Image 1 (cartoon, rainbow, N blue to C red):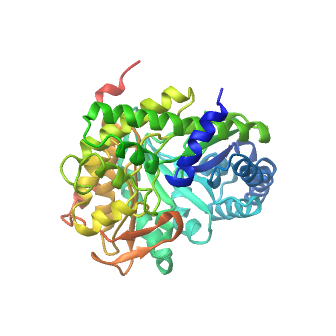
Image 2 (spheres, one colour):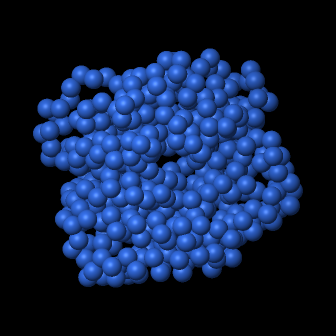
Length: 452
């Protein structure tokens, strides 16, 4: 039972400490929208999304007014389109992305995710069509997000797909070069992708999910930083307990919103994703939170240890507050979306290699990182391969959302606006990995995958 006292106690977190409900995401199963023609399938997709999500924004706004809780985004995730579109036999799935985009606009949501494929063990014909369609699909739509799962602990790493995604990311960048390679900001590749993630660009509704479900993503790095300011000089055990208590309160608010949205929409409540998701606003930074541990600047020695402790404490506090914690949950480190990360990258304290080390212990991976536009496709594939290995061999979710910006070099910046922020162009090791990437095939699953 969530009490009025808890709500009042939390009000200050919203008004003073940048706490928000980052997203209410409605997951919609589109399996029954398969048809023998593209036109029929797209019509069914549009109709079903509008039928289920037509009141999503309205309900979100009502809850926000009732509790004076900022709800930043309302989003939709759907069944991976490579599954839904397989029956039509089309050679291009861009019309499906356009149908998703039209439905998102009709419902008034901020993003729709699920132009996706699951290829961790190999391609179907439909998977290949979807991947080939990604650059054009992201160029001609406004709200569609795309994701591809390339690896898992149970299956290993599909290196053919890793190689292909390097080329596809370059094509997506070139196709949206007039917008700072914005297409790449809406495209993410995963190892061990969760099926209930409410955050973009990686949200999709997995095959094991219900017909329709409400998943909520919360935030709050500013709340945790504020809590840590009260324990300056205390040992790290006290710090961990302080983070747990803050995460507990944040999660309780998220569950309140999720359950109310579920009841009003007549849709089952799924999970709370209690990720600490930053924004470009001052006071809402994971990097500044890490510096509150006692680091001079994010990226210095000790940053990975501090992030590991933060991630663990957030999860412990969240799981005490709710029995239904899921998605990614922990701490995000997207460079362009975090004021402190941007500053650390500009100063040179935070480099790509350090970010890779940090991804071993955070929620996702190399996220919203802009690199020179002339970076070779095989180098991008090599970056992806390393991150897929971290996820696969450490049995965790990792991801890459990387943006090779045409015409930009180290020292330049690219502006995306809104929550996507501003990204400094980061240097990349240019020694070739082409021969390794072009071998293709599959890196086998690690020995600890054999747990049956």
